[in-house]
Length: 229
Picture 1 (cartoon, rainbow, N blue to C red):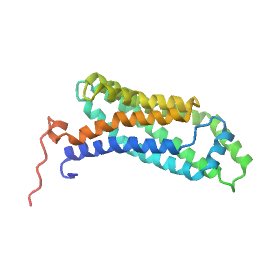
Picture 2: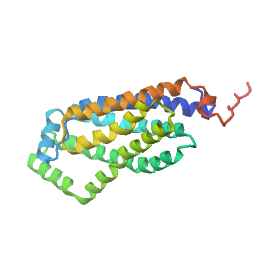
Picture 3: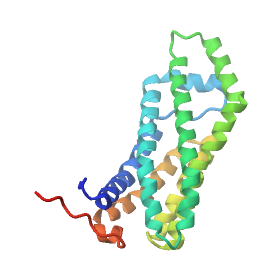
Picture 4: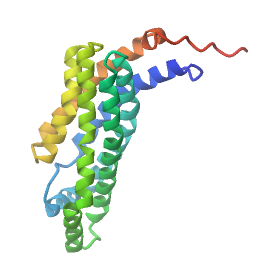
């Protein structure tokens, strides 16, 4: 990785992130317990395997960090012709990823609430208050901007034809379907399948980005000359 050339650095970081981020999302989803709307059931699911719950959410935080350069790379691929999709997508992506990270933090608190040493009745009551809090509902609503951002950038890629149409469709639809399935209490297989579809769409784009030359990545900008020895 060439740290002296910002064009090369952005291309390589974006390409690697497009490959690694969806893979981490898949692993995290496989480890994550099925989402429960009832506090008591959710705490039971966490208590059944606290180690997996913690690992899943640590991986989600990692995947969210990787999603940032991956998303910026996709916005770059839109170019000037379909830049509006990328710009609006970024407006949705930033608060969306922050809200999702906040939810992950809240669910890491459940990891401690489900420990055997915690008072079960008090923890269930606390979880119920959190679920019914207007402030938490607002965070969940903002989190919906995260899948919306991927939908917008996927539509932009489809219209711009800068990636294969099937890859653009998978990028656009995977996260919205996965989020909808989770919030509706759908089967675990649906959430996992959505993340696999996301990986199948995004990883080939990342490979393609890594194979591009710097001139193909940013054709309007000259390369930064290497410093003199």
